[in-house]
Image (cartoon, rainbow, N blue to C red; front, side, top):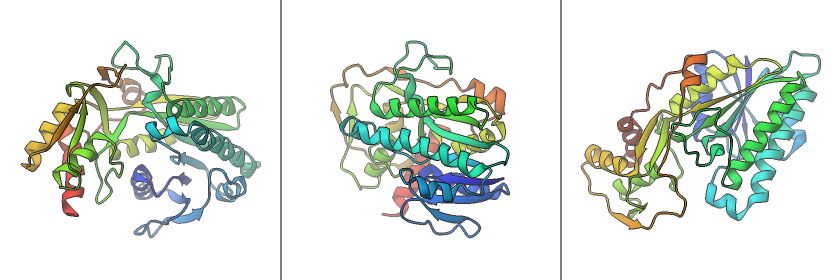
Length: 311
């Protein structure tokens, strides 16, 4: 397939592009600013989710789109909710409309959309399966859910076949590509281990559990989801693998690096869920996905390796 990847220069985007290319697909990477190096067989196009004309040009000759571009920071979303809706929702609408125009008489396109496990909010039943009712608690999650709903309606017209991947906490590294978001717990711990940050701020007693999944395993889910797209259908899959507490992440980093980690404890955020875990049974059963790189040790070791190498 000839596949357009939006957000191709991002954390997940780079890994997905390499994997799609290795599987023999023709990959077109859509970038907003900088074109990554080291991708000799990838065609690069410049575009913006809010520039409809650029999307029409970018989608003119592709069979499928892997839509990874968007805004993803929860705290920032509270300060700028309209910006998050504009990029994540209106940008997705622009992309689907461009696909419909560019497709002409060609068979309906395929779309894989990177959504988030945070669309579920804080359900009581754990682990969380795809039948749990959405209850987003922040503008980021709400904008992703709204984009999912728009995708489902577009599929209902018969002009598209799509899969939304509700990704929980992506982590780890492939080669030199580690998680660049220092606000997330594993990159923060790795940065402290490398001496790039002073301390790890822990809110509560460190027992809160979240679900983590390796970026390489997420990229494989993207690959499988492309094959699972069916015209007229929108399917949803959770992508998570390893429940882990903040305390266990800290202890794992200490063991792997042999370094002391400064920790500052703060009161827990009001209403914080004690645990949020993904049920990935549908992804395993329907698409044959298995996490290969998502042990806690590898998730932490990969991120620490990229941090320590650059010290």
